[in-house]
Image 1 (cartoon, rainbow, N blue to C red):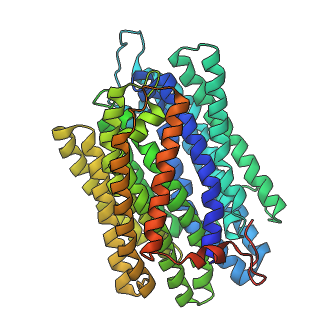
Image 2: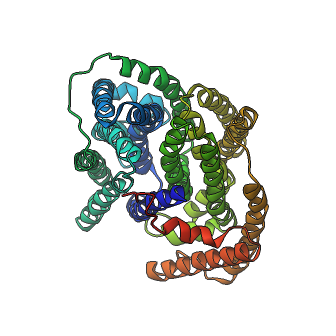
Image 3: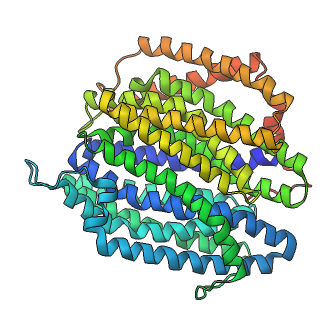
Length: 528
């Protein structure tokens, strides 16, 4: 159960990062609420994040990790590290050019995502679009730093050093929390709070990059910075990476277009962002952690000719992910108002904002299992150096998301964008699953088919308990923050205990696996 242990390391550190991120978002909600400044800030922050996921964390790593693992397996670590140096030079060159282009053209380029922002001053004298441009100038270098961070994190993960790569995102949240606490005490205006946060984002990216470079040096990685060259290794990386860039690009452009639609309804972009933050908590802890651990695991198994081991790892990845994701999705669907009010509702974040965010969160909750499964299924293609198939299905998903989202936006407003995102994710999952089953790269084993319906039933039991309990509790957001968090902690812990009890009685999992996952075997070197 090395996969579960690796996922636990990544998931635990991701949990710390996401909890700090939740604290960060609580403070952002407290100081910015949902309005002109928050829309401008979220738009500016989304721009480098979208391109980071397109060029680095998504496409580049999907192509780089299997090739790096293959070099280690076939040619040794020295040759693999030489390839990593070539890849780093190419990535730095391309992304640096992109960042410079955006910085020089930002007053026009921001229309990609922020065309719906107002271009005339509001009652407070703030021009939303111009403010977003100012914030974006500050946040755009974050793309370069985080692209390099993603590459060096991929090197660490391939060498089974998961901890540092999983932990560096904590830096972003610590800096943003520190900034919010500092400027809050100085009574900054909302505009200046946004400026301080934008600067903190870029500074955190530089620190994260330095940390993973240090981690690679400490792990014995022998690499050097060199001028970019079009070597055979870089050529192969581009051959695999371009479909991945297109695939990730389709997905991220999809998000950009959805955001540009949302900004046509005042505060809608903020409503969706706050809802997105909450469902991203379990997605990051479960789906992203599992995907990060699974890709190098599958790559090594396939390179060693162990197809049976690769299939077993994929089955366990699906099983573990669903075991943790299904109850989270049910909880987000059943008690969204309770959760949002307890976490966000204070200061500029009103009860009306809570109600609006809860509507979006319910639809996102329906798609949460699909979002997580995508993180599990795509590595099964990437590990076999197949980046084309996920690209095709990302395109199909994007067309559904945009067309359905635009149609529903006209009927039910911003909620329609959240619903369309969930539907498109399920279409993507179904398409990839069918192809894996047909090719024989995925065979659902007896253990998974036995445990899945039991997980569903245990989640339903928990959902019923949460629905009954929240009706008996006071309205959160009307009391002080400490009491809100006590009630939140109580109901979340109670729901978890109820789910675990129901899953145990229904035998939805094997308790022995937990002990085996965290026991250190002499035959298996522990992950960092």
